[in-house]
Length: 399
Ligand code: DP6
Image 1 (cartoon, rainbow, N blue to C red):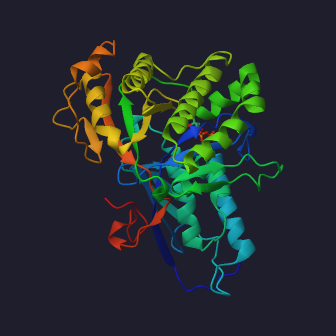
Image 2 (cartoon, helix red, strand yellow; image 1 turned 60 degrees about the horizontal axis):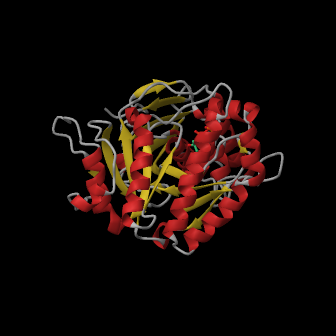
Image 3 (cartoon, rainbow, N blue to C red; image 1 turned 90 degrees about the vertical axis):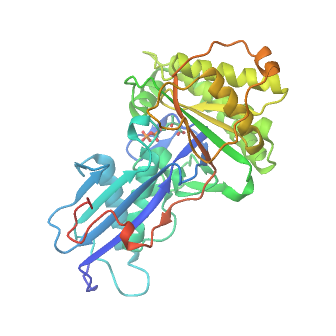
C-alpha cells in the first residue's frame, strides 16, 4: 500500500442506468456474497430519463469516509457499502494502478456524493443504479480494470446488471466464492432500436417488504420457488436470449409477462405471503392483455418488481396507441401543470370506438400518477465536464 502519487485530491463523476429484469432474480444461495439461486436477464434503460449520478473523491485532507445520498448524509458503515469499498480497495492493492508503478494509496479516505434524476418517492428500483454507479466510479477513481460487475453484485444483486447497456444476463455461477457469478451483455442497446418502455408510476406507495428480506423468506418457505429454480428459469432464460437475438417481440413479451407473474406467484406462496402488486397493478395487467387481444397479437408486455409500478415493454410503432389507451383507462388526476407523460416525446393517438368496444375495463382516475417513456440505453458513463461534479473542492456536496 505505498504512496507514490503526488496527488492529494482526485475526483471522478459517473452516471449509471436503471435496469428492469425480464427474467427475475429472486432468491440467494449465499446472502453475504449475494449469489443468486437462478440466472436473470434485464434490459438497461435510457439514462436521460433514469440514472444515478455519483462523484467520488479521495484527498489526504479527508479524515474519514463520508457519503451523501440525494442531499442527505448517510453512514458508510452499512455492510454492503463496506463490502464494495473493501473489494475495490483489495483489487487496487492486488493489481496496482495501470500505467506502471504508480500505486494508489487506498488508505486515503473518500467522499461519495450521489443523486438520482428521478424522484425516490416514485418507488423505482434505485439501488441497482446507485450501486452500479458507486462501483463504476470507484473503479475509475482507482484505475481498477477488468470485470467489475461482480463487485456491484456485492452491493445489490440487480446492480451487477446495470454495469452493462442493452440486454444483460447475470449468470448464477457454480463456485462457492462467487467469482463466476457476474453479468454479461447479451446484446447492445443498438441491437433492437425499436424497443421502448413505458414506466407507469402507480400512486399507491404503501410500505412493502424490501426485496432482500422478501426473497429470503421466499427461499425459506415457498415450495413453488423450488419448482421455479429446478424446472422453469433456465429454460426461460435460454428462450429469452433466443427471442432477443431474433428480435421476436411476441416471444420476448410472453416470457416477460410469465416471469413477472411467477415472481408474484412465489411471493404469494411465501409464508407469510408478500403482496407487491395492488389493484391498480392488476388493472394494468388486465388492460395489457385486453390491448393484445384487440390488436390480435402480443404487442405489449408488463413486468412488476418489488412494488406496484408497472414497466411496460413495447415497440416504438405501438407507443402512440398504447399511450392513448393508458390515458383513457387511467385519466390523470390534477398534476399541478406537471405532464402525465415524461421522457421521450409521444405522438399519442386518441382511442377509437373499436378499441373501446373490445376492452371492458373501468376507468380509474389518478391511479397512475405519471408515465416515463424511455428506451434501451448504454451502461455507465464517465462525466468529463468538471462543472458537473457533485463534490466541491473542499469535499462537500455542491449546493
Ligand atoms: C424484484 O437486487 O434489490 O427487482 O440483492 O438483496 O439487494 P438484493 O436485491 P435486489 O432485488 C431485485 C429483485 C427484483 C427482480 C430483479 O431485478 O431481477
